[in-house]
Image (tube, rainbow, N blue to C red; front, side):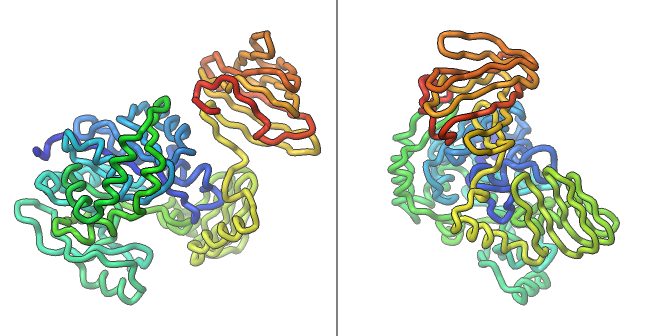
Length: 474
């Protein structure tokens, strides 16, 4: 295999990102959020491998529930993926990589496996590191990328470099993978040199990865082959066979392959990498004022130092605080000392144990056609703001227990109500009675925004009968 062949990016977008609550939630996790720029972490990852001279169209592996958001974010970038593969359940990185490798097996492509929720400040250095590892990968090595450590970090695994690979400048054999160390051990690694943070990014040929996985985890490969054989097309998506994939062992690539192969190699890379694993990590990478504060949105600090203040809605004003994280969203406010940022996941678990919905959904709920956001929830009535994307349409549907009033704020709405179809423009409205088939479409060239007022004895989202849906929902 020539190392000048195009590399196929395989982007994994299945994480939950609980340590970045209240912004990251099950229905809209951190990789889908714009946390470090005006693009989401997923979009930044895709853009990083957008050089068509070096990279082929990407393969994305994601959660079924996130599929329409992922597709929309790719559309915003103007990227047409080779495939968007839907996992029925999460099975960690080794099975996800196996499915992608099986898809690429016949052409024996080099595949660059990347998490979708990391940041890399130096894209050119990253691409140079990939180029540096491609030669070794083309010759059968399973390459990972080690991040040159700057602090004695205890939250990452480490890679101990071995001897340089002959004829592969900048590429080393892996002497040892090391679990997350304690502080004293991490300080020793930093002082000794030759140890890099484990980035979770990999580069290898599809066939070579499958050879090693077949040797080490034959049942996993068998289940993934079955899942691929049972795969069904669903609009722009590829749904893996659920029963087979659910039966695959849940393993990371490190545990399944890299720690046991004789052909592991590492490329040390200084690329401005961060796994964005906590709010403190975002403070570390954020642009700071003269007092070390990171201020995002409508946030103001007085006599405060080294704090992270983020507002997604209201004004956040802090006086005399030190080393504090404050994150404000429409329905939740998080306040936590920076040195306890990792404990956010404990709070999320506590909220779930109390059956709170804040860890699961945002007030803004995304759908394949756009999104809605509850503005007011009263007794027998709700008010929602609805945004319908250009050219999109809701399903032809019916509600048994509620009526709806629609008021167009801007854009144009094509409305089907019973036997009638008509267009509403700005400041026009209509009434949808209960037990009446209806549909809302946006025929215009700009997003459609409207206010919906629901009234009735039951207003749950499960009071819906769909008769036709362009997105295949039942």
